[in-house]
Structure formats: C-alpha cells, structure tokens
Image 1 (tube, one colour):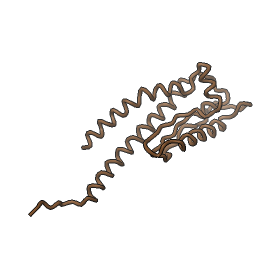
Image 2 (cartoon, rainbow, N blue to C red; image 1 turned 30 degrees about the vertical axis):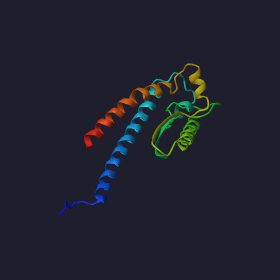
Image 3 (cartoon, rainbow, N blue to C red; image 1 turned 30 degrees about the horizontal axis):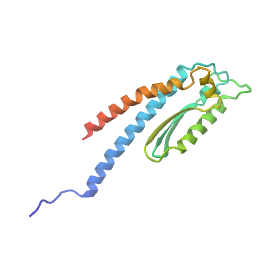
Image 4 (cartoon, rainbow, N blue to C red; image 1 turned 45 degrees about the vertical axis):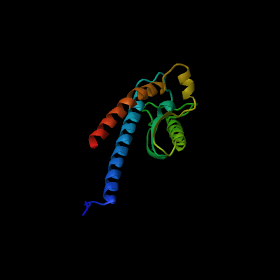
Length: 160
C-alpha cells in the first residue's frame, strides 16, 4: 500500500512550460521597453543636425529570442526629412533595418538579445567626431538593464 499520485508527469511538464513561457514573455517585454527607451534617448539627445533625416531614420532596434527575430522597431522617418546627395530618410529606414536584421542573424540560437543600431554607414564617423548618435543609448542600456533584470528576478521569485 503506497502513495498514489493524483497527477501525471505531463501535468507537471505543462505547468513548467507555462511558467517558462511567462518568463520568456516578460524578458521580451523588458527588452522591447529598453529598445524603445534607447531610441527615445538617441532621438532626444542627438548631437548632430540631420539634414536629410537618413541618420535619424536609420536608428532602431531588434529583439531576438533564441535566434528568432521577435520585434524590429524604430526606423521611422522624421517629419522634417529632406533630400540631398547624402541620402534620404527612406534610405535610412532601409539601411537601419538591413543592419539590424543582419546582426540578428548572427546572434546565437541560445538566449535573448537586444540590438540597437544606427544603420547609416557614416554613423560611426559622426560618433567619432564627438557627436551623439546612439552612444548615449548604450550608456542608458548599461544603466537600465541590471535594474530590469533585478526586477524580473524578483517577479520570478514571487511566482513560486
């Protein structure tokens, strides 16, 4: 006469999968939020005058979940975009998305990633001149991510 379980192993597996999916969604939500914060930082505190809108429109982010692109965002034309020989805002949107997708394809299939980019080929040159393009966004992410992960860990602990 032993103890008989009133559940099946599949029940346990389903519950664990449900919690794992909840954690996954929370991680992705936080990475998307951080991506939006980075875009806002880059656009609000840009240190350059974007004459064509190309550089500003090339700024965006991609969130990757175990090698799969979950969200590609940003890459929006500014209202004041003009056209000249260095490119257009449409060029910026295209270049930014292409760079983000290219980098996302190089991310490991294990884990999560947030990639923030300024896709125009001259973005690094502008940063090298001491003008902010996405440098302040990187600093913002470095400050915010540990706090976001700490809060996530606290939420996960409460789930038990």
